[in-house]
Length: 207
Image (tube, rainbow, N blue to C red):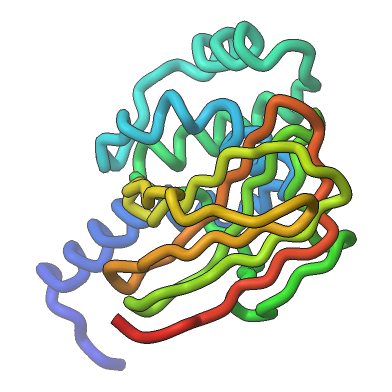
């Protein structure tokens, strides 16, 4: 039997304890709908408040009251999921990981996009995936000509300007520059319901 010095055993145990919250959250399998609700409503107030601490001290009852106050009528299961997402953002200073990424598929159709639409149908939150530095273009196709706000957000909550958004009627384009290798996310918000039927991500040129 291999002998492991006590100091090594201690370090292994310490690392395991510190990483435990991440492993727990990664295995929670939060539904996409809950993640979309959180990232289109709750996250705006908390993206600049993460601490990177390995513990979250707000009592669950207090957090639940906060969620009910701002989220309206929600099931207890949904409230628990939103609490876990809030805790993850506070402790990890990042968005909850998703197994999906637009960059992997290049094009999402309406069926896939519906998975990332908020219940109000006035917002979307989608993972673009791990992008290398360079210029990219998003091509939007919608059923209506509703105006919407576009935000590209890095995993460190850095926002990219959307001044290059242009287009007519139901087709719009957005060019953006990824300054560093990072996971990026797309958030769309509108005053009225918006229904995307296709979204395409193109890599134009390296930085």
